[in-house]
Image 1 (tube, one colour):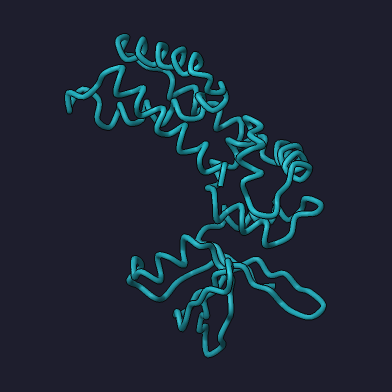
Image 2: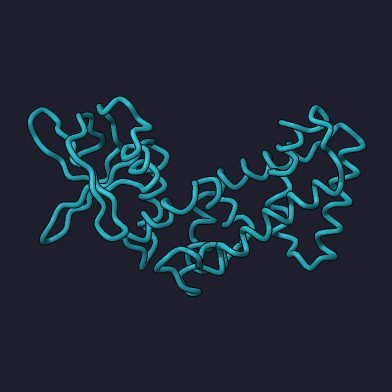
Length: 225
């Protein structure tokens, strides 16, 4: 069983929607399927050091041995948990991690965002229901941590900003945006306020509304693709 591998990058290539690297480890060449995000970084030389370490999930089949590589142990463990669900194969598992971060998947499970789960190639309505149901029990601690984090992000001390956020939420609801979608983007808006806020003298309700609608409409267009 291969747990992880460290070696020099020999080659990388794309086959349809699959991304691969060839790693030289002590004279042996290992062909490993990786996530698209890592492939892009390697392809565009965003990673200058071509000696890389990958956490490996080894899947043995009758006619082949498949290696899947991840840059973190958390990604590998998440992938393994996804594969434990009936009907979910390795390419669907990779597809989930190609499109979303672990925190985004956990948030989708927490909010039961079936549209987001169904936007992943190969996942239909029945499978999305199964994923949400089974992953919810598997990631109880992550969901609890996410809820605590969201709660902390909404503890706004500035009363003026707190009033703006409350008004923003009501306005978005009146514009027929779904409540669970609004709850998803509000932490992003609050984070932007923390980063920029009044320092740039651009903090206004109109700008917050414009920014929120941009994120919500962007998410809707992505789901429609």
